[in-house]
Length: 122
Image (cartoon, rainbow, N blue to C red; front, side, top):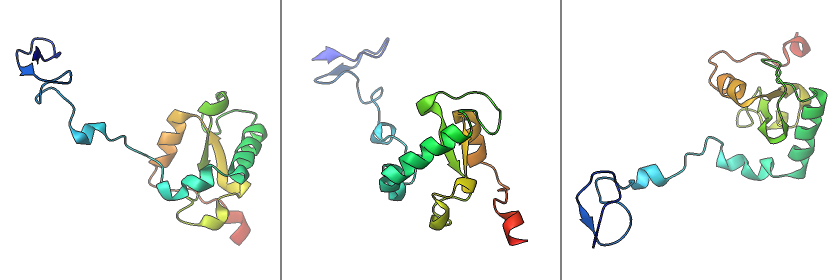
């Protein structure tokens, strides 16, 4: 038996580092996934990787929202019309924009979505 590793805790435990009061619960251990698992195979495909590279080169590595340069893997390609809404637009370059991580989280949480093809249908 040993004492819990939590600072100042006097509880004794048989194994592990923390007592029940200071250990993580199962809910805390599960990593939250912000991406849809149904699209995982798409995001690992060579078609997506080449389109992502094309968008990065088209925008010269600059975020389309704030304009700052984004390095390699930090750059995130955003679907204006989400894949789950219209899967036919998932590789359409006009539906994709390059964003830095802070701008991407802002774009994902916007209530009013912009029209991508408004001039096409008018």
